[in-house]
Amino acid sequence: MGSTKPRERILVVDDEALIRDFLREALTRRSYHVDQAEDGKQAKEVLKEQRYDMVVTDLKMPGVSGLDLLRFIKAHQSETQVIMMTAYGTIENAVEAMRLGAFDYITKPFTAGELDLVLDKAFEHQRLVDENQNLREELCEKYGFGAIVGRSKPMQEVFELMRVVTPNHSTILIEGESGTGKELVARAIHYNSPRKDKPFIKINCAALPEGLIESELFGHEKGAYTHAFSRSRGKFELADGGTILFDEIGEMAPGLQAKLLRVLQEREFERIGGSETIQVDVRVVATTNRNLEEEVEKGRFRKDLFYRLNVISVHLPPLSRRREDIPLLAYHFLQRYCQEYGKCVENISEEAMLHLCRSDWPGNVRELANRLERAVVLCRNSVLELTDLYLGGKTRSNTLNDFPQVPGATLHEMEKWLILKTLMAQKQNRTKTAQILDISIRTLRNKIKEYRELEGEEIN
Image (cartoon, rainbow, N blue to C red; front, side, top):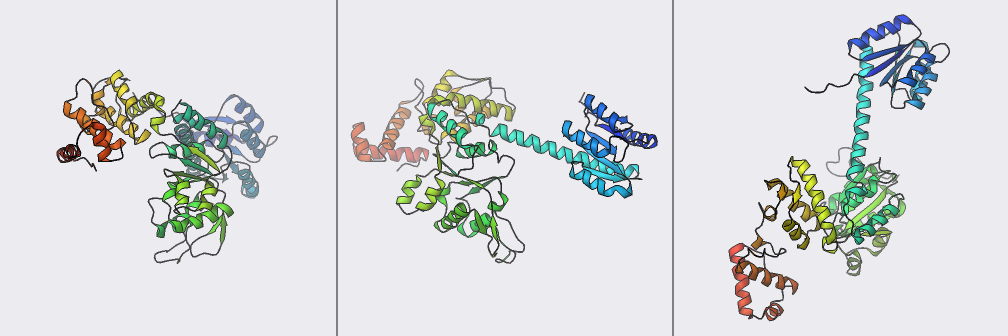
């Protein structure tokens, strides 16, 4: 038997008994739980003992007025909605009541239908407020520091730096290989900062062509170019008061780098086709998987923009430098995907965990997450085994980063792994590879050709 939605509690306050009776009957018919108070003083005593979703109160009452009662409610039950009932001649006072926090007012005399409309609007507003609050709490939980898993020394250093920089408004550059969690760190910084209730806007610098990204960032005026049929606000304007993330900023076209530099320096810009200077308060966070200092030396990234971005630098280590975090991450993803897919995989076998810890993970945490997601989906038992890590994906013979299982691997698998791993370590230098393996260049070339033809590997 399903649970029923609890009835909203409404307190009716009026010094006229006929009005109280009318309200009680009309609201009870709508299945609300209704209590009454004959004046403001009695209402205050009732409110000390019981919490209400809504208070419908007269504005003019002897002793404690509706405005006095409103102030009391906002001080002691701030989440309670208040509807004011007022006569025609006191509308100005009703407007003052709304300034003090009342949701709305209704003018006497009114019908039950008019009252229903006001109440429906008030409860719908409260529902949206509650949903937004729940969403903010979920975002804070999802992107809180606790959502970033790691107890290794490199990650503890990252956490400590995040705690220091999160409360202020400094520009942050997050560096690290692809898949290390740069965007997750950026979001955690935002949702734990004083700006958490303001927008978080992400710009993918690699995805937008130079001709469009300027409009995306700064907006445009009506008629600024063909098909600009109305004014459009850009990302900087939309992010005012919040945080804007430039994802993989090393991919940004040189022509736009100068325009971005001005915004970072002056915190102002003009829309395309406009002359109005728009000022914004935005925290800038940038991520990159490139070495921007090297990019500056090669002339591909502006030196002045690099210095403007590199106020605070957060470097995320690759997973290969924090192997002690792999078991934590593995169980974190195991729990997440079991919950997401409704599976009941309770553990990871020792053999599977050993394999995870020894793998290279060139795709870092993202690759580990993808591997665990696939394994959880395909696993048929309560314990995730080594074989589950390969179901639906590459076989052991195709996975160069994973040492073939011993015993169990064929000589062909072992030979292939040894040759290709040595070739990778020598940066595809076949002469050095052949010398290390003590085989001829011709033999090495034939082996590589065999692997390419049989299994479609992209081998140089």
